[in-house]
Length: 151
Image (cartoon, rainbow, N blue to C red; front, side, top):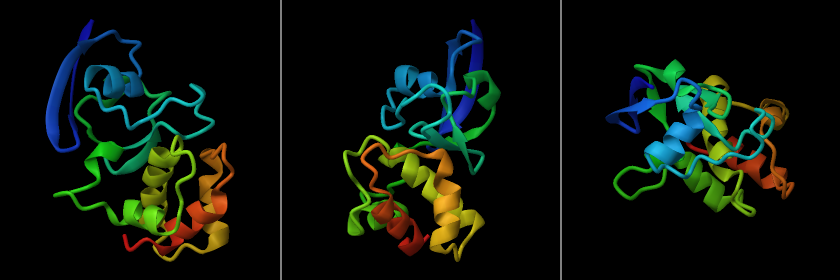
C-alpha cells in the first residue's frame, strides 16, 4: 500500500492504495465517482476519459499513483451551481446522448478537443474522436454537439 494524494473536482483527496490501482478504480471505488465508466480496460473505447492537469487522459490505463499531486476532473466536476457545463448542455441540445454509457468520456474528450481546436470542423472532430467509441453509433449528433458547444 502507498498513499496517493490529488485534487479531484476541486477537492483535495488522499487514500492508501495498492501500487497497481488504476486511476479509474480509484475514482469509482475509493471516491464513489461512478460517472467515469470502464468500457474495455484497454484504452480503446474512451469511456474512462477524465482530465488530468487539464488534458484528456484515459483513466483505465493510468495508475492512480501516476496522478500523485495532479488536478483531476471527472464528469461529476463539470456542472457548477446546478448549471450544466456548456459541453454537457450542447450534448443535451443536439441529442448527443444515446444509451449514455460513452457520454461521460465523449463529453470530456469533446472539451479537450475544443480547447485544442477552438474552431474545429467536422473532419477534425471526427478524427480526434477516433479514440472514443459509441456502441450506439450516435456519432453524428456527438460530433454536432462538440462542434456547437460554447466552450
